[in-house]
Structure formats: structure tokens, C-alpha cells
Amino acid sequence: MLNWVQRYLTYRRSLGYALRAEGQLLLDFGEYADSIGHRGALTLELALRWARLPAHVDPGYWARRLQAVRCLAKYVALFEPQTMVPSPRILGRAFVRKVPHIYSADELAQLLSGARKLAPSGSLRPHTYFTLIGLLACTGMRLGEALRLRVDDVDLQTGTITVRHSKFHEMRLLPLHSTTVEQLARYHRQQHACFPDAKTFFVSLRGTGLTTVTVEETFRSLAAGIKCRGSRPRPRLIDLRHSFSCQVLLKWSHRQQDIDHHILLLMHYLGHKKIRHTYWYLTGVPELFSQAAATFESRSSILS
Image (cartoon, rainbow, N blue to C red; front, side, top):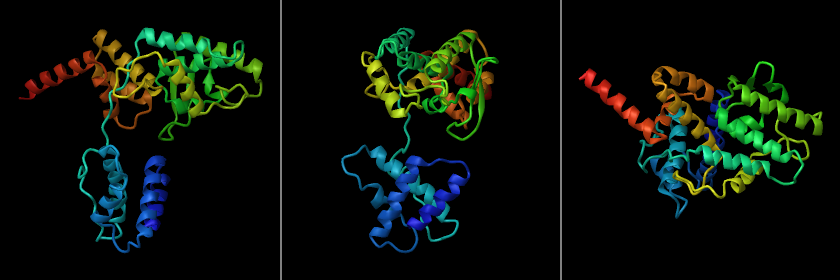
């Protein structure tokens, strides 16, 4: 079975899918199937047996494991007709979006103020985190995209950022507000003075690129005093992306602009592959959810 897993991952990755978490799950599945001496077609019994292996976990994790095998089974079934493709939701829903924490203006100010006070005093570190958090908040960029930015990707003359290494390996251009450009220019001067040969835009105290783990650990200390209003124990960096998206939609709503027309722009700005992922933000705050419900009702009455 491991051979089928490797063939499937090679095929999907050739199409541009990273499949980091799913790939690891499937490799584990393939190794498990081979270790117990499984031969022949992929069966429902095998898939369920492996999916339920971890004890004392959220049932949703079992469903996610089975979903990974389901995707593999659909591929294998093209070559092995005896393959059984598990029906969706046998073990419940695999993916349930949790409610994000939407940062208030005061909370964002708290994060930025804390970033300015980071140790060591007088070093580049406070400026790095102040600029990085501010950029994530006002563009909705993914953390990985921001950390992979190279100096040449930030065009201070045109006021744009080129995102070359997005989640789906697609490039996109982000126009920036003038105040954002001013802060990026200020940080770049400070960064260049410390590390004139730096290649990445955001750097550590050694002049190397920042790691995701380091940034998230620092952020947790900055957000320690903020009570989470979402479904998770604490606010997260990714919630800055959610907050940006909801704020943009709220602004359009207050201006009485056609959200259905503008949301395509937001989809491309955020780097989403499917517009339903962008529409999901309409449920992010009560005001947007109420408006979406009212729009749905009005259109339903027209259709009926």
C-alpha cells in the first residue's frame, strides 16, 4: 500500500499541492497497511481500522484521517476497480471551521505597543515585530508569505508587494496604503543599516530569516493579555488575517457597496483558490452574518 501512497503523492504534488499534513498521514497509513501484511485492494475495513487507531482524541481527527484515505482511494480506484472508496462523513465531519478571534482596534494597538517594547532594547527586533504584525494586520497576508518576502519583493517606489511563494504556488501583487509603505521604508532603512547584505525583508537578530516557530512564540507573549473570543484557547497570528478580511467586508457594507461584486477582489488579494473560502468571512462578525442572511432571504423571496 505504501507504493500506492507514494505514487498518489507524487501525482498530486506535480499538480502544485504541498500535502504536508495529509501526506504524512497517508505515509503512516501506507506503512501501517504493509506492517500488518495487508495485500490486495484498499478496503473500507482497513481504512476505518487505521483511522480509529489514535485513542482518546477528538472524533474529528478520526474523520480527517479517513478523509485523507478517501482521497487516496479515489486515485487508486482508477487502477484497481476492487478498491472501496469510503463514503463521506462515516466518522463525522472532517473539517469544521472554528470561530476566529477578530481583533479590536484596541487589541491591535496593544500588540503593536508590546512589539515596540521587545528586548533587547535598542536592537532591530522591536522594529521587526512592530512592522511584521502591522503588515499582517493591514494586508491579511499569511505569516509564511510575509516571512518569505525578499527585499526585492517589497517595491517601495510603486507601493506594492509581490507574493511569490503563496500557499498554492501562485504569484500575486498586493497594493499597499501609503502609511504602510512609509513604515516598510522606515524598517528597511533600519534593517539595511544593521544587515546591508540581508536577502529576506524580515530578519532575526543574526540577520537571517525569521522562522515561523520563533515568530509564533513571540506573538503568544504579546497576546497573553488578550481574552480570546473565538473557539480556540488563545488568539493566534492567523486571526490577523481573519480580522483584516472581516474589516474590509464591514467597510464595504457601511459604504453600501455591493459585496458580491467586490468579494472577487478580496479573494484574489488574499490568495484564495475558491471564492467560498472568502464568502466564509461573512460569518466572521454578527453584523456581516445578519446582512448575508437578509440578502439570502430577499433573493429567496424573489426566486419563489
